[in-house]
Length: 400
Ligand SMILES: Nc1nc2c(c(=O)[nH]1)N[C@H]1C(S)=C(S)[C@@H](COP(=O)(O)OP(=O)(O)OC[C@H]3O[C@@H](n4cnc5c(N)ncnc54)[C@H](O)[C@@H]3O)O[C@H]1N2
Ligand code: MOO
Image (cartoon, rainbow, N blue to C red; front, side, top):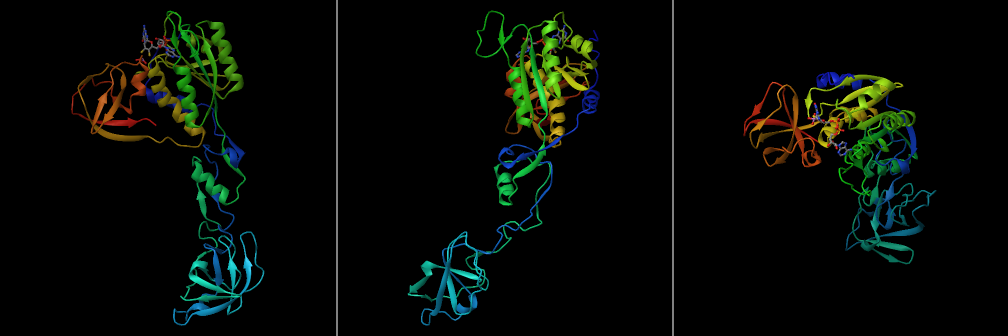
């Protein structure tokens, strides 16, 4: 067994990033596009709105016909028809005339303003106008919302409801998006049971299977949770092979170390290749990077915070690349709230909670899920540094 010949994090990341996984693109109906990542630049093929339209219910006029209107000397225009939303007027408005128009209806040619009905008086087939209108009053001009030819969305944009609103406005019924990478997730450990099952003595509830699956979904991937495998070679191997057959990549948690029941590395070795078994970081040392049938197989540590930290450092950037979103790392500078001792010889990723101007280290250890869940991010402590003093300036890499 290639037991924990640790490599630096950079080497591990290089290996993960060199694996044969290419972003794939598919076309989906607009109604299924929410939350997906756009794989094309979108240029509007039409003007929105596609015609000059009334923004109020009232009378479409030639503004110049009303220029002389006043309370003392109102202007009278003959009402020659009606245009409602959905109509398309095929006549030209003559001087001295107007039409009744509904909000949203196209202006007839020759009209350049709409006066709301509250501001005029209707007398038979005439309206009496007391104030001048100006061109564009009560009108939304063709293309002012979105002009034809404008780049409205860039490739790599995650589609929220604002973006789907834009796509709908330009009539796009189908959009090209990055295909969701399918990731198999397996929890290993004879002690692990799923929520809903009885917690017999010596057992604990699964954390990693749920957390890793949902982290994949949050990033925009498709998680296939294959279940919990007891520490039995046959069962773990079966599930790994099922993952290889059905998915683009396989993630396991637990059994990644070198103990008597830590089987993951030897199974991957037997079914394919192991490139890395051990990374010089804390938490997350017992991590395996391998490949079966050309597909990445990554064994994450069983300790929840180690598992989720390494998911964040190694797997999340790969998934983002596959869905066309380059890594967005956010950092902030804070003062360390109190003195901490680091692990000698391992680059440490210390989870911290942010409180005002300070970063408060969370020292429950990587076996606690709350070390990760309560953290806003982590600070890096280089392998040659053993003590960080209270008040020291630290850079926090934020999660999420
Ligand atoms: N002799 C050594 N022992 C250990 C070392 C070492 O270097 N030498 N490293 C320790 C470190 S660091 C870590 S991290 C753990 C991780 O080891 P494994 O990946 O083999 O994990 P397990 O032994 O299977 O489990 C560790 C721990 O986590 C719990 N666990 C596992 N899976 C889940 C899950 N899906 N949900 C919730 N909790 C889970 C498991 O019950 C154990 O308590 O090894 C140390 N040991
Ligand atoms: O490497 Mo373990 O992951 O320290 O907690």
